[in-house]
Image (cartoon, rainbow, N blue to C red; front, side):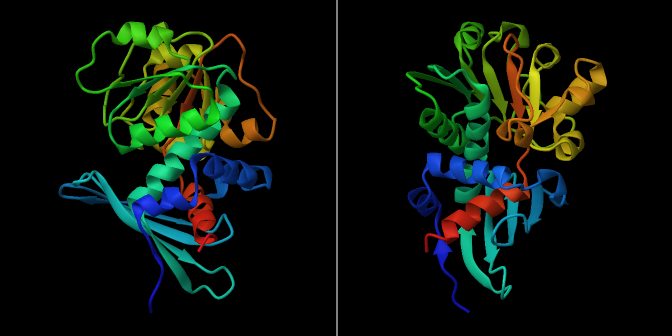
Length: 281
């Protein structure tokens, strides 16, 4: 059997950043329920993890298989199936798909959380996800200034205080900055981990912010930024708002508080983006 193979660069060529955001938004508006997504399967390896992520939430069923912890850090493939015949119809590079869908999910949150005139973007991280998030944010808001911070972080306090949007795209296991410094109007996106004991943001931010997640079930299972804040008393389960509720107009962030979007990555997002890419073949 010979299947079309979509390489990393081809994912972006076939589906631009704004189109990817629109595809995710359209799926949620059409009634897709992230809470019904199967949980991510995790197989622990000697030097990393094997993740198994199936979903039938979108037009085409998919299974994404990726490893985390190697070189490069994320590697894998997504198999796309025809919904009617159930035959495999495409293979999509796992890195290209993951970068595209993760940045698009974050940008969708930014679309519904960040000030319309947001101009200053601060990105923690300098890897593929950091660059993908900068591109996606600029497709959603009139960004004029982008600051990318790596391991050698200088003047972080000033950068955090001045930012309209902050994207955390790192492998950090502890908070990257003091949440008290985040401006009341700012939006913070954190995507760096899907483990319950790892976080990129602190209790100070969680206590101040409207907290938005992809789904309550997945966040309470995997999102350390949320779980640890709840365990400490800085936030409560009842305060969580979902991305779907924002998109459908069922919830709105408080105007006088920062907004914190925590993403762990979910299979339905892969299905939507993989399906949209496959439909361009």
